[in-house]
Image (cartoon, rainbow, N blue to C red; front, side):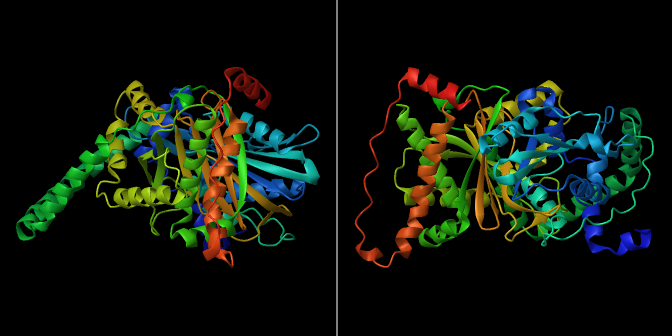
Length: 511
């Protein structure tokens, strides 16, 4: 494809900017630098299950186009010496065959085997001398199916950024042929940490006069505005008060059931119809995310009761997106929140209302972005301090929960239809990370749990299914023809207590 054609192709122009600037934001830099502690690895994994096994040559052609179109896939990370954030630079030694792989699942090719194989891929650390992504085709899945495991570093993108990318590279037609790969500029010698640091220093020194003038002018305008518009003073005071609240939030104590941590992950999945979520959302006058959280919290209550532990408020973190239409695709732009989940609350509607109030209050905070604003300061701290601050924040949470809108229509890749899309975010010190992504009428819930924190994974899955079914039943009751004459729902079954010996046996069998 000629240079002129590349410049006028709107898709290529869009993808050329995927991932944002080459220099990481301070928030992304912390994720990259904190990985000196292996517990804080920030690896995102997506599992796309196909209805058939794609032709390998065709899949290779699709990825060659992707690598040529999206420069972030050809870039590795260099940390400048002494100054500046980690920066994405072209890898002159890029090896396509290293990043795209294939693997045969042993018979019978069950879903459990797929999840276990993907977990091993996810846990392996990236080679930091190469671009931090890998794609592995898992062949031999039962029913003639296959799965693609796409592994990326969180510093490159968040879950929404991956969906934005896949929406543009997947096809709407099974017979669509791979696009011809655009020309790629020849990579020059990679910048060293020293050269990159000097370049950053020179650019910042050169910008100092303009920055100083701009800052002085801004301060002058601000002082004038404060005299003219006293409400600006109040806005500043409101932000400072909000920042004090946001930074002063202390999570409730974690559950004793989830207190242990390790380096081992377990992947699980639950699939539910999107239509059921929409019906329940309408009946409960709540968002799908409200229902999702309320259902999981109900599942956590059941898990504790069946293991003989009284439920109490549980520390949960979930992201609040700060993206706007003007933001580049890829990258990261979200704020974290700390939620004392009402695990003991048995009424699903009461849990939903509690979540709604918390989200309203949090979104109304002027300083919702205060942690992001503080990150430039954090990146200048000694790396040991950075890792401790990060670990202290994440390990205090029993779970992190996320919900990402996916692709609403059928899509194909290399001639195979994507029938499931399982999302897995990292567990950087927390007990588990649970993410839901809607795909073509399905809600795929990916559960990434620390094996030391969740000792009864099969039981937890069972409890999650019951908790989610409880909130989805709100939609079924509301749409029943005789809903005004329905008998009250049956009382929940008495909690089951498992003995220690049974717990150990179940844990061994589940692994």
